Length: 594
Image (cartoon, rainbow, N blue to C red; front, top):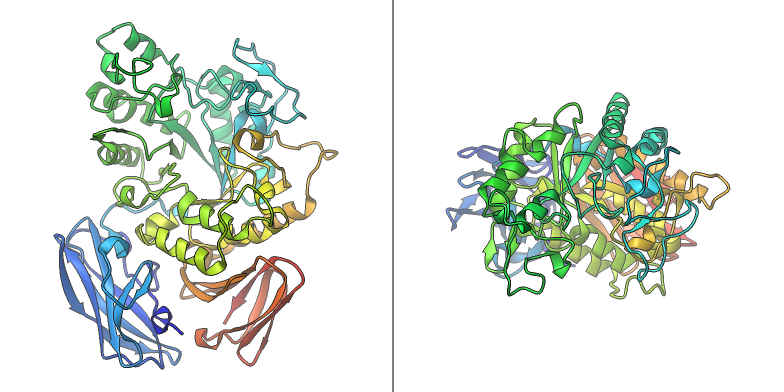
């Protein structure tokens, strides 16, 4: 046994006295140690002005199962970084970091961290997000004049193969249609609606905006968004928009004027006759010219100005509750230029000026650690620190949608390593997802393991985000193929069991303080089964997920577990400190424990 793995610390309230301190504050941090593990020395090593310093920890209490050591962490810098040094006869010596235990010196990249910055909006901890791609969610039956680019399609057909009409297929969903189906969101257990872009554009994905000043008439115009947000707010639902700060569309009013050499807009973009299209564009697509963030006027119009685009939609009558920022990892980065963190902090400051309850989430497909410093994004869409490892472990056997397979131990190592690059509140403020409008559908990836994957979605730290239609078990093998219309007609294929599971799981997520803000301890990890605890001072939940049928006996005596109360899923039993599992299929279970 790796005794170092028995030590535990994370950023939750059980272990950190204040996750949003101010500079100069002393924060109490705690280490949990098994009662039978003898120690000679416990310290924290902090980085203060990039210089390592050690601080002694003292034994605070012994609850019979664990001993708790405490230390005072000085918040000297905006991002306080620290790790635990532990030494004992059974253990030897080593470092406990956010990525795990190491019995040797390691670099600082995975140190625990606490950001001295304004906190994430208080409501975000209990948020359950739901992504809607408006053209495919629901049609109100209203008819709008179609632009030349739109290729009308019948509602009940699938998107065409990727080589035909990508982005041009128009199925007719609008914001009035979303308004008419808010009952479904409430019944599902959702309390946060995230809309992909609603601006006028030359595609139904609308990331190629032609203006940021109005709602696309194809979606019902400004009136429809105002009515939708008002109706959502009256039901206790919040609504977030989707804004691209990396690029506009080629037909955007600003780019047209910039191309015409208008000096008021010319520096909004990066023109260079040596480039293939004469200007910088996202991934070489000429339809998506990149913004030049050296432009002070661009910063004013999009972000900082009193009437900026960012502010306009957060204020009445639209009153959005926050923004998801598209391709935030690439924003303001271009070759040798990197203004990403500078611009991200401007965005954060502006959003907070519009109210401390406004949320800011970044799209980030890759390692977001360097961009999460507590003063920019509240969190990210968690592709690396959640979806990637979960897909690699839990995807259906034989599917080509997950070519890189791992066992449970590798998955947990990947989760811990990715999460270890973030402050705890950035991790818990990020959106976990099984799929989105840019990926294959959850049912296509996980098959009959989708419910097991959904258990991880709602129980690991972070905000669960459901892509509309996953609760019905809709399929799709790639991004556009997954942007299928919602099967509202009961005669269409709708998986009633999956819908019931999602409702039960999201209801549990909505009422559980441990899932909203509790710490995470791994209980058992092997190739085909993982188990962990989510804990606060008042609640403990045990989660078990298996990717295959099998029988397991998990020793839970070390965690002081004596009684189980089933909350969801497949059954298990307790015998002499052993959790006994005998499942005939892949599955999961959740129990309240004491």
